[in-house]
Length: 351
Image (cartoon, rainbow, N blue to C red; front, side):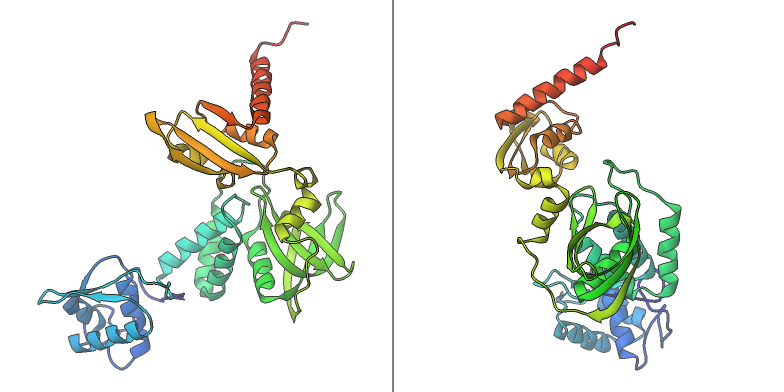
């Protein structure tokens, strides 16, 4: 991904032999970047307009289009006097060219999502943020930081807030297999310094955890990322170790979610008196697939290991009538929860 250094129309602003913001002359790389930025705007560009923008001839535009195609960019051309060019979808995603405003908008959005362990915003989002912030010019990093400091999110759940910089440093060290040093505060408030070989970042839907090999303790550990501060990638590379017991996700379940570790999988079948789109927005995708059925209703089916107590509590957020088809344990739990809520809504007896 490349960020341009010009205005919001994606031109480089370096001047040229004609047109507004053109990049004519012999600066072919800059001109190609400007052309690519223009083509990534979802519209068809007449050859004459591109030539005017770039300050070059139509023949040069055609040569530049051919160069982009050689680099793997699928540029479609239409014939005729009013023919033009359009960037279409290809088999692989080529590098993107973003102007300043687009780069800042994407970085702010990724930081907002990464700051909370929101289910569905997994490690890939953090890796994307790390890559973007690595190539952002200093002036844009300052803008992103200023926007982040001036805004806040209203999120559901009780997941602790995390500094996006902490996640990006940890994600970069994990991907690059670099030893990671950080300050850590234990559950009882005891501070310590840790030197680790990071293995994987894991989101549970409410919190982020780092699975890493603790070099001082010579053992594997799970660290809550919201208790981490001053993370530093040391630059020292390491050979990956074999994590005992399978995947990092399973390791986190055993170490910090022991009550869920042995929960057997069961089939979840629910019906809601609401459209699928509305229900899907209120429930995590890990519960199953939501599809519309007749009468404006929808049905959710899936195989889950989440305790029925947690599923019952999640259903209260849907704000729609529903029926439990399976399992029977969830039916009993919902019935008990409904009884408790009804009792809680009644006036307290006088004393």
